[in-house]
Image (cartoon, rainbow, N blue to C red; front, side, top):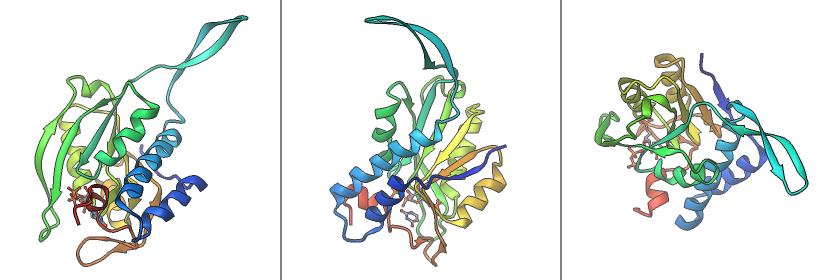
Length: 209
Ligand code: PRP
Ligand code: URA
């Protein structure tokens, strides 16, 4: 059974306050999205498996632990999820990266798929879907459904800000999926934007507005 985890580490909260600010530059916004992704990766991988190994140090033999078990894949939802990839790969350089292109139709708010490329062994990996924003949950549930069709059994969703509507949808449709957020916000506005949120994450990462 998956759970909702709100990762409210003080450093994450501090960085979130900077990206919420409408006056933050594109450069700083992009850098901090990546830093938050690193911190969320650190927090959300607490329960991964390790195994004991013996390491020869310059002065003796140490019993140490190395990460073992399932390998990781990250799947950013284009575009905005791309901003989180580098931050994860800094900590888990061996993770493979799949891409899924979805945009929200501005009228229906339904996700429209336009691109997909996955690593061949995706079904054997622990998959982290990345997207800074979980609004209606349409994009996230489409991505989860897609990965399940690929045979993935171990899926986690990592978003920076979530709305209750999106969280409820994912939790109802896919109760086995762990959801990691840095903040759970108040509600969606009439255009499907998270309130108070941070605006359009893709536009703010790539400077398209
Ligand atoms: C944004 C965001 C999510 C989606 C969330 O992407 O990055 O993918 O909206 O909304 P939902 O939960 O209601 O589906 P958008 O469609 O604006 O595309 P972009 O990343 O290319 O800007
Ligand atoms: N997508 C965004 O980028 N921001 C929102 O608030 C909602 C969806």
